[in-house]
Length: 215
Image (tube, rainbow, N blue to C red):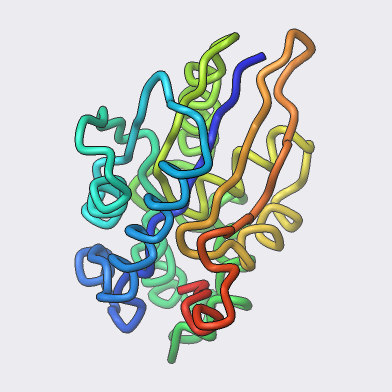
């Protein structure tokens, strides 16, 4: 049996209003990546291959975890969420996001509008789902352990594919995904099986409760 381990990047600049402004780890985000790296190297087995998206926050996370020899795969890049919400606002489909807390209402509405073709973004929704399915299929190698450092939208889409969830349920499972959380998919002859979701053993300390962040 093989295994895919998906890790969300560390806390990024959630006070940003653009894709570029968001794409960098905060001081806490770097610390989260370091803590996770220490936990993985101490408690987990070796990986046959390590991948990360091409976004800065993803590459800073994988490097901070202690995996300098990783392969970049842009298919692991996040949904261009700020671009999508800007398009939603420009078309009068939603109010302006005032704070990161608005994510809980904006994200489901944005995904739904994107799927229905009301907004276009930098890629079509069907292209997004295809690239996520493609990278997960390639990582699903029998007998191999593959680590992929990515983002919450990619993880939610991968889980939705395994569990056959609709767009509304995908949005719901995306909302609680922690920064530097760990998600595992078992690769079996009968198809992929979700084995772990949103675990954060490196943050399970009384003095790290405030380090458990969602954005």
